[in-house]
Every structure is written in structure tokens, then in C-alpha cells.
Image (cartoon, rainbow, N blue to C red; front, side, top):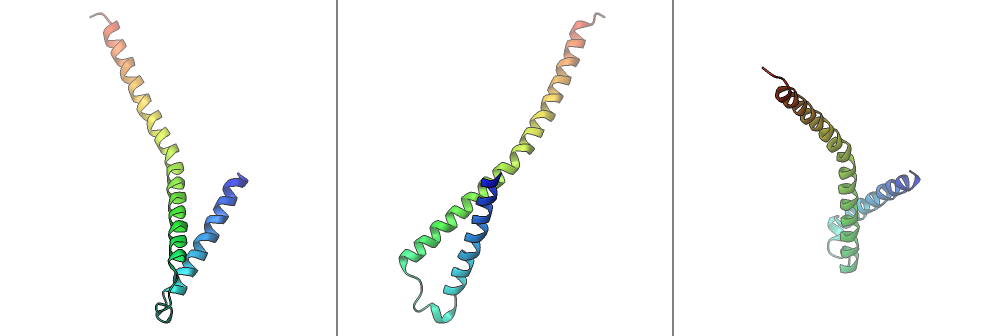
Length: 92
């Protein structure tokens, strides 16, 4: 749990620093002497890591939903099997 909190704090810190960096270089007076190519690449890599962390968070959140869907459908299938067994087992 502490590892997840540490990752969450890092993500919040990194995203705020990235936003501040992007705002700093988006001013009209800074566009002339903008960031270097290496700085742009590092910002792009950081942005990519943040997007991947966001995708992991969304995937983790959807796992309980998928499991509840599976359980719901499994119950429906078991009910249908019960009805078929009852139909086959009864004599008219």
C-alpha cells in the first residue's frame, strides 16, 4: 500500500512539474529561445510514463467490474443448466 501511495505522490509531483515546464516554454518571449531538443525528449518521455501509469490505474479499476460481470453471467448459466436438467429429468 505504501508503494502505491509513493507512486501516486510521484505521479502528482511529476505531472505538476511537467505542467509548469510546459507553461514556462509556452510564453511568447520564450518561444524564440525555447527548450533544447534533449529537454523536449525528456518531457515527452515523462509524459509517456504518466500516460502509462494512467492506463494501469484504469485497468486496475476495471478488474472488479469484469469479475462482477463474470459472476453475474456464471449465475445465469448455472440457472439455465438447472432448468435444462429439470426438463430432461422430469417424465411427462
